[in-house]
Structures are given as structure tokens and as C-alpha cells.
Length: 180
Image: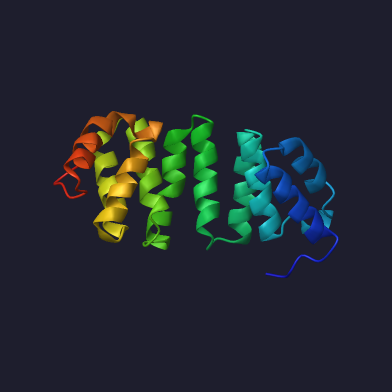
């Protein structure tokens, strides 16, 4: 990946800074000044997705993540971003289908089975959601990391149908269970 040279690198940094401060309007203003020739650069595409997500422009975010995926098919974020945007568009079945091939491509990434758990839970397939969540926990290292993952899941509204089961596991202080 080629580096982004000034002034475009400064514009991207400024856009990033504004977004980190929660000001998507100023971030967009800086971003729009980046040269057209850099619009397909992986760092620019990654940032564009984040900006579109902050603006809740999910259809455009699907397109940006699709371009990122074409440019960087080995970037796990491109796969996750595309499915997340689809999910936000209430196209959860499509989000699941688009993310599913990534499980083989990125077997050690916890975000993939975790998001698949969220999508299957939202689709009403609690058995599959449990399976994907268990796969996520199997990738976590140590009991404390697994318990932390369960605590995060207890705050994730996409997994709300599993909360009673997750609460019991956290209350027991163990991530180990035959099923979630």
C-alpha cells in the first residue's frame, strides 16, 4: 500500500480528528478535500466507511466497504464493515450470508463468529447463535477474557434473547458451559 502524501495525509488526519471529536460535519468537510485519485486507497476507504457509519448513511457504507473489500480482500474489517452496514439496513440475512465465508478466511478473528452470533440471534436462530458465541469464546484466551466477552454480550442488544443464559454464566463466574 502506497503512503498518502501531504496535503492529503494532513486532510485525512484532520478528518480523523474531527470524527474522533464527534463532529462528522467538519470531518466530512476535510474528507471531501482529499484528492480524487486517492478515493480507492485502503486507508481512505476505511475512513470513508467510518465516516458514513457515523453519519448513519448505511447504504453508502455498504458501497464503501464493498470497494474496500475489492481493494483489500484480506482485510477482515472490510468483511465486517460490509455486513454491519447491511445489518443496520435491516438486511440481516444478507449480512450473515456475506460474512459467513470470512469464517474460513479469518479463523482466528473473534469478531467474525461474534457478529455471526448476533445476526443469527436477530434472525431467531438461537441454537446457531449459541454455536457462534461458543466459537467466539473458544478463540478467547483464558477465563477472564471469556468472562469479559460474556459481559460485552450482555450489553449487546443483538444478543438480547440470550441475556438470561449469559447472566447465569457471568453470575457463576465462569465462561464454561455446555451451551450458552
